[in-house]
Length: 122
Image (cartoon, rainbow, N blue to C red; front, top):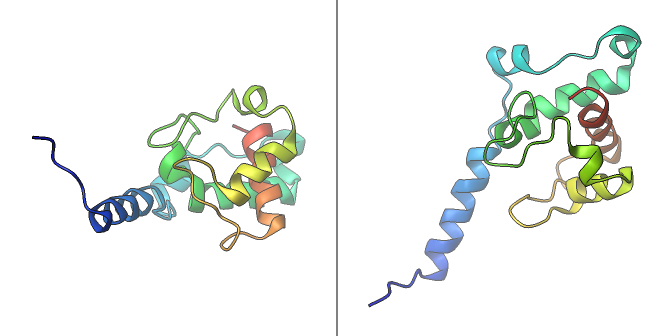
């Protein structure tokens, strides 16, 4: 006999999965492991801000270096998967599949900054 999950159980599991990924990643270890913009990029305030957003919002699922984890790998492949910047920004804003929407949590400037960081630094 096949066991069926009740809707409340499914909703609880979804909340737990999102909470596991949504850990703020702001501990010193996570912050230290995330790549820092270098060279001319080191003085770009948008990329520096994008790194902060990545560490606190994205690294819990995508790994501190974008290597993947609960979420897919971003480092070295995000531009191939999303050749158009707007497509990647839309995924961050609206979510897709198990990726939650960050529209209510991140401003448009935050989303633009983190997408630039993921494309230019990771």
